Image 1 (cartoon, rainbow, N blue to C red):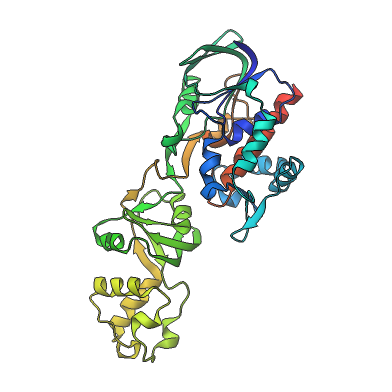
Image 2 (cartoon, rainbow, N blue to C red):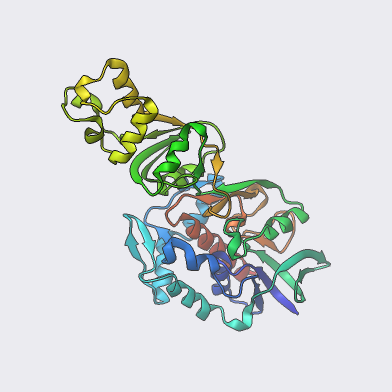
Length: 379
């Protein structure tokens, strides 16, 4: 089989690229039996498509590379494109856009835009090389030849739905630099000092986490392995090792209640079960706040800046995305073509650009795919 263009990956970036190509002599290759496996399960099955507010501040990566891509195809343009295709995303969780009923709505659009004749599913790419002007794509079923190749294979998260390192391997084989990869938007495992967190599994509370120069507010969920929840997932994007602080008091001013007759567990704006667990760890008796000594009061106040060093994270099987990837200095941000190899393109999560929780990674997938399609259509 010989095509003008081959796309590796039938995920968000690959499907969006295919949906916007003028030249229809292309094939999309994916190891899964259906398109958009990750789209189908994201956002609790409703797919968090994008966010009302999108800027480079929502991404880990080179802002100079990211900015023109987001400007070229913004969240407003994405929403307009989807509405034109019959999907009206709804805003939930303050600023996040989801499919109104389920992710099937956006997958149905891609199924219409990318007919089955363009798809090679249940097909695993094993190796890619170049012979003359053609890319030779070896799969477990056949060899495909293509004049141009777009790698939209995603990252390493969700191995259960076919995630693999094939995109990174192709990049390395063609001489690209790979920024160290790791799981991101993922829960933290805990060290011995915080083993009591595991006993609180299922409990959630609103906190603020401060890490480096970033601050995140939201729900923290205690889990069997450690801690998770939206605020933890966002913090995980920026944590590599060392301490962060968790404000369990979330702005609550203890000094204003210094003379309160209420018990600590009643007064603090935390689930009682959590407060009592902390009191056990601090070796404090649950008593009226007015009866605390200065040193005891100081210990309770420390919940406003609880120093915490994770042991690690839950790994790729639980991670929403991959951090790291192909060095963006080696990619043309206007067309997403490799600066090293003519007619080789990389889009989406395989690049060293990672968004926070809230639709930012799908927006990046769509924006990068749009820019790539625009470049291919101009040729």
